[in-house]
Image (tube, rainbow, N blue to C red; front, side, top):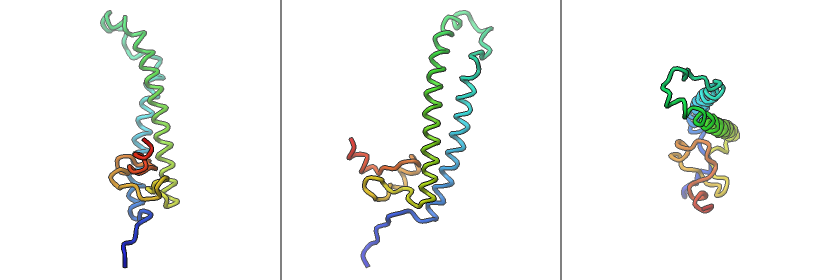
Length: 127
């Protein structure tokens, strides 16, 4: 008979990944909302009555955290976009296939990085 090399995940497996990814998208959207609301907060986080020593740091730390927040929000938006693209690949049944080697990406890797499009093997080739 010979072993059949699976070149795609079964519909059942894809359905499982889909649930996982949709949960991750929901979580990521919530995180994004939190990030956005924290940097749209005009920096008035009720710090008027805090100790004077904190006042001195406030100006610098505020711009820092605003920039850091913006960076995080951008990363988060990209993450959500990558996850949505993964959902499209699930629909096309190409999900979990390495775009370099054409082999299946290990399930463990996909559970950790559900939007991965490269197998560990291909990733190592790039380094």
